Image (cartoon, rainbow, N blue to C red; front, side):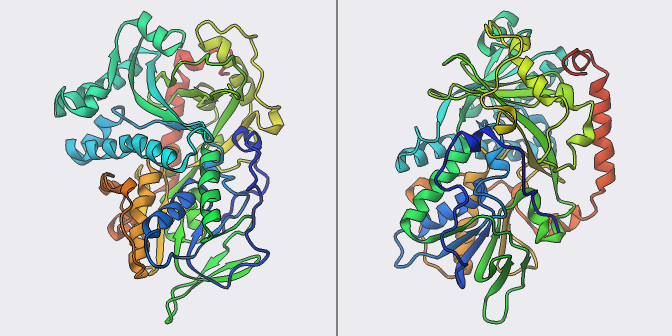
Length: 492
């Protein structure tokens, strides 16, 4: 069995939020039964519960939903990520079109881009935009080397060639090929070119807690933190699935697995399909409004940083990536879920990043963290890479009554909200619960085909060679480690 560690490093998102839902348990004991048990209280679990409400709010009755969380509420990936609501508007086009064709690639991009309007509409409807620090604007990919620019510009050119300059997504992308302008728009020292496109940013932990608070106020949700599911049964002859926890058992008519890296804890067929990748993030104090755009620096296909700045009164820069450092220790990241430990050297790398990389940084050579190091100033987190690069969304084959939304590969913010909107009517339909599409969801694009958790896909991926994946990652890191930009004083 694999469960998340009990004492992860502290995250700024969690510690600075001071949420009233920390360690929340709706009742001392578990309900005896529930219509839907959702395992995992992060973004995917909360979004699924939210759509359950929205799809049934006009029905005669609403389903009773229970969320079981192994640790604290939203204490895993969503509470530890980089806060970027940043679609792949163009940068993966070449890779995706080779696998799925031009239209398949554009379907994937359109699904991600649709999250921008979906977040805006949801936050406005619920009145939580300011609370969750939701902002929209341009983001950038700054090429720091010619190698990076060849890749980024090549992806944009391929998308423009296949779909034309008048395609709405192509038109949303802005190419900057003048180095001085690229450095100006990105604020990144040494940027030689850039591509900009629409994106957003959010306080992910606050967003999840806001959704859960809304649902708890409606009265149809029971939320149980520190209640790991240790076993799930098959559906019995009476239509019940029994979920076992340290606090007792609960019977559910359906179970939705939203545990990301830990899905294989209860679904062993996913042990080779959803894998852990450990990353690192830090919070850095900065002057109000100093960073103009969210963005990422790219040196090659492996080495990058990404960052944003929170609005007042926080003003904190959230910085992640640090691949210049991490490629020298690949086993500290790939297939590693030790989020109770800091990665060696990471704190110093992040503290020196502003002076090293940001144009006109007026602070000291070592920036001050937003909170003390051990109190949320820097932290580790586990994202879940998938064996074929895409999440698993839908009913679980050969397991009647079980559904999954997991494996979002560190890119869940522009994928999960609408994936949860897709899975919800499947769950409700399986229970013969009356539902209707809420106005908010009427314009959503279809779930991309590569996301579907089909029997054929899952069976094929059982052949995944984990050691071969590990060696391939090590080789990529070894190749990058030879390059000049990974051999600076800060990265060694």
